[in-house]
Amino acid sequence: MEFKRIDIYTESEAVYPLTVQLSELGINGFEIHDSADFEDFLENREMNWDYVDDGLMNLKNVKTHITCYLQDNVQGAEMFSALKGALKDIKSRDGEAFYGSLDMETGSIREEDWANNWKQYYKPFNVGEKLIIKPTWEKIDNPCGRKILEIDPASSFGTGQHHTTKLVMETLEEVITGGEKVLDLGCGSGILSIAALLLGADKAVMTDVFLNAVNTASENTEQNGFDNTRYAAYCGNIIDDRDLREKIGGGYDVITANIVADVIIKMCPYFKGFLKENGTVIVSGVITERLGEVLEALKENGITVQKIKEEADWNAVLCKA
Image 1 (cartoon, one colour):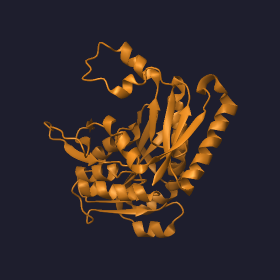
Image 2 (cartoon, helix red, strand yellow):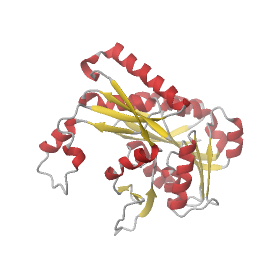
Image 3 (spheres, one colour):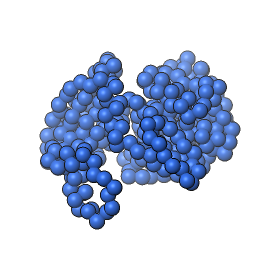
């Protein structure tokens, strides 16, 4: 499969708010090219750097831009149209003073090239108290005896590095005690389901609207030692697919939904139907500006908020239903 590569030119101070707005459109994977990163490196020379990546040095004179990728199909074309409309709205509302030109350049890239290009930047890291996340191609020492979660995201969202994903995994450490049945809505690479299984859950059921994500999640789950007696993965959208909802069934102890605010709000009416009585819901991918709307939707559907974790304006919400 080919992907459309889109470079969006902006200003350094606008990178974060622009990526938030891209996330709201459902675009969750970015490459950020910003000369300010090189300046930050220069200002922090007192730090002990093991190496300086060539990519960092290449940022010295780069024009700040965000790169994202969309599938070269009908759904990708619809998302590209939505992206153009969103950038047009931003320019008409805020002008160029803050966001810059927002000019776009497009190209195409093969899936295997896209999937391999970023691997040089993805290194093992700890999450919470119990997990260490590592890409499948890295070898590590594990002196603290953490549970090792191996992941190859391919072209699916879910390396575990984003705040939203880490917040959910940290929350799973709190709620998984052993034997749980977990439903992962919007599974991406499958990282949350795998984390739940490693922490002691008995079974994980995953769904995603992208078939590529479902296939990747299945491969990653088996890579971590769990066969199809411990997991199931379905392609589809629970919001408008009654057959999928029936296939998923009920009796779940935990639901995770690490998506975006608009989708979570639409999913809220279905959470209780999937859960056991007093089951747990963890929603994430919610920017602070949209948190109130999500909390209201949860409340309206009989779901009680217990705890909110926030990091860098991203929120994960732990609930009981």
